[in-house]
Each structure stands twice: as structure tokens, then as C-alpha cells.
Image 1 (cartoon, rainbow, N blue to C red):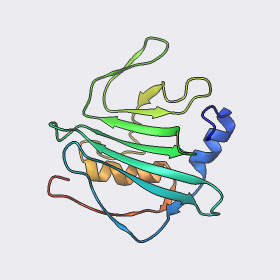
Image 2 (spheres, one colour; image 1 turned 90 degrees about the vertical axis):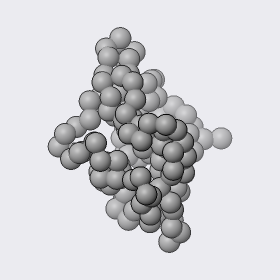
Image 3 (cartoon, rainbow, N blue to C red; image 1 turned 180 degrees about the vertical axis):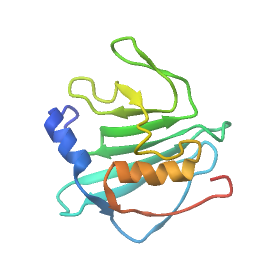
Image 4 (tube, rainbow, N blue to C red; image 1 turned 135 degrees about the vertical axis):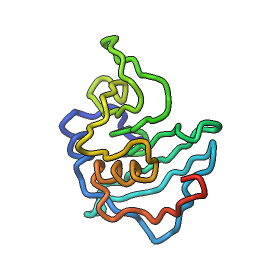
Length: 149
């Protein structure tokens, strides 16, 4: 079974590891209410990762992008188009927001989206590209844009 509680230094190292696609499969960006999970691997092929893409059922502007390690450890998740998030210290973070792994809290902490890393969070496609860069995906999967992407 995958380890669900990592030391912060290990989680930070996993997020920083260069990641690449596992094959040349073409993925379709999900339709309304859809989701896909794309396997990734470290460039050294020692660690496995997942890139999860989820779209809202009704609201076109709602969704999330997530990078997981070891099947269940969420290293980073960008939520957009949804409600604000309440952190463990009771602070409220508006949407969009970025969840980052924190030792002892998993993905319970959210932060404002760093403007220097995400050019236009209103553009879901550009935000996906920025998210993959943020997660150090150096050889991204092949994802085909949909009609409403």
C-alpha cells in the first residue's frame, strides 16, 4: 500500500522531480462532469505519478487539476470555479486556489494562486499548461482540446 503521510521534505522533493508521460497515448480533455487520470513517471523512472483532470458537470468554469504521487498522496491541486476553501486555521481562501501537501495535513491547506506561475486562471487550457509546469512535467502527455476547452 502507498504511504499516505510523507515528510514535508520528501513531498517537496517529489513535486520538484521532473516528470514525463509514460507513452504516446492521446487523451481527450474531459467533457462536462468528466475526469481523466493520466499516468506520469519521473524522468529517472523511479517514481510514479498521476495527473488528474476533472471538469464540473454544469459550470464550464469549474474544475480541478491534481498531481498525485504513490497513488494517493496529493502533492498539488488547483481548484477553480468553485467555492472558497477554509483552511485548518479557519482562514478563508477564495477560488481559484492551490492546495499543496503539508505534512500532518495532507492537502487540507489552500493558498492563493501564484500570479507569477499562472498567467490566466480564467483560461482552463492555459491553466492546465501552467499547472503541469508548476508540477515540473517536462514531457507532458498528449491531451486533445475539446469543443468547450
